[in-house]
Length: 85
Image 1 (cartoon, rainbow, N blue to C red):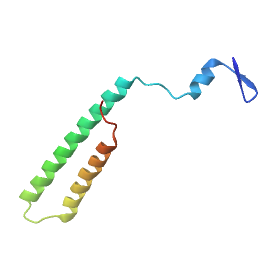
Image 2: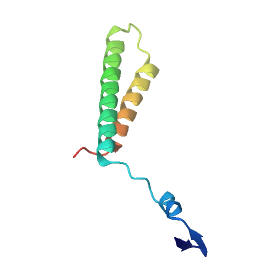
Image 3: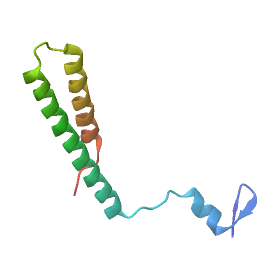
Image 4: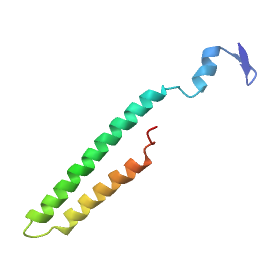
């Protein structure tokens, strides 16, 4: 038993205040799965963008820009994920 702010605390209270520990390999697996999904989304969006650009008789510039923004936002998300070791 220890004392925090003049009152006794039990050991479990002190542990609750600590950041939970997640095994490193779990973080790595989640990160790798997330990266794979984001990369697949980017590839899918790029294909759709190319298809729209090729097939459209009249180009909808707003839609093309939306696809470009979705691709760029996912690239940004991907660049902010931790690197694999």
